[in-house]
Image (tube, rainbow, N blue to C red; front, side):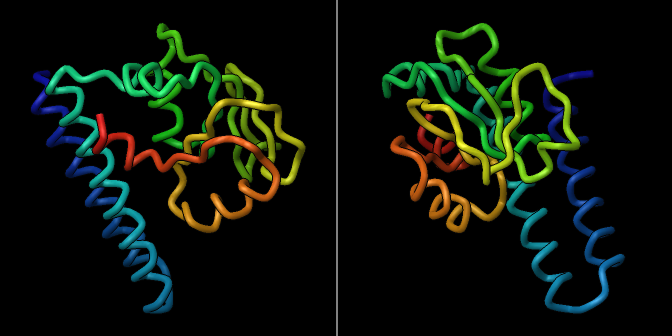
Length: 155
């Protein structure tokens, strides 16, 4: 399968998921929130594909900023792709953070956001509610808190 075909397949899948979520959830307000969330996810993943198509590496961003040890907040699809992308780079993903930490298994430690978190140079938030998450992290961490989508558009 060609790279561009994978992008279209992915885009179609995300739009289908967004539509299904909107249809399944009762309540117009919740449906709108879910549609907005999945549309945002689609835009981020689309930009991720564009970044890759232009042969740009996320590792370069972290190296240029001097981030050697980072954590990833949000261990769903975006977080896992970021970790995989940085696997063979000089930027070490030390741990993940997720509200579902007790139910997840991964190749690195995963902490609940309420736990004490080890020191890192930056935390990359891949989850949807960035402002709320960043505010809570800023109260307990002395490091940069970065929005994943901002990184993609800055690479």
